[in-house]
Image (cartoon, rainbow, N blue to C red):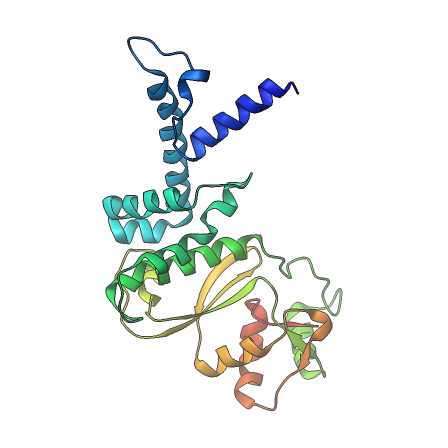
Length: 252
């Protein structure tokens, strides 16, 4: 690539990413309709708008709960503070929950201002679980056997357990249960919530957890090679069929 072309591409990229028209007149022709700076800003604004639309698609519940004006302010602030430097838009929204948390007004964990960051954590986790390695393609323990009988045998046998990468745990300061169940932007209750975001059979679910369920899943290793035995706890033994059926735990 000729050095002149490479330098021009570098300038154009920086002008769009940083929304800067510095040096525009050296590279862009202006006229009496649009100056060189105005022409560059057309591309920069279009690019930023696409980034904002990307955030709206990744965080639909937050966008619905906050409304277009407030969410637009969130998104514009994030785009300005964290311009995309990755070749994929999947990476762009990764820091949005942390940015919302760092940018909110000072206050307690259950202040209204903390809701956007908490909800964004759920939606970002769903995006990560969608791409995580799951157990859908793992070979069954007893090929050819009726799945229900195979599961009963698996539970009866001495097995070791791990938590797949496609099962993520969240401890949240708000209860978003009604919103997650209905898909509607219903304000959360100011009560702590333990949540699993999990994928099973290529479907993502958000499952509320009891503290003892969360505690057991939290100590499970995420590597099948380091799977651990089932603890001597009748509650976990009784809950295990549900946990395995929903991809929360898997035999190692």
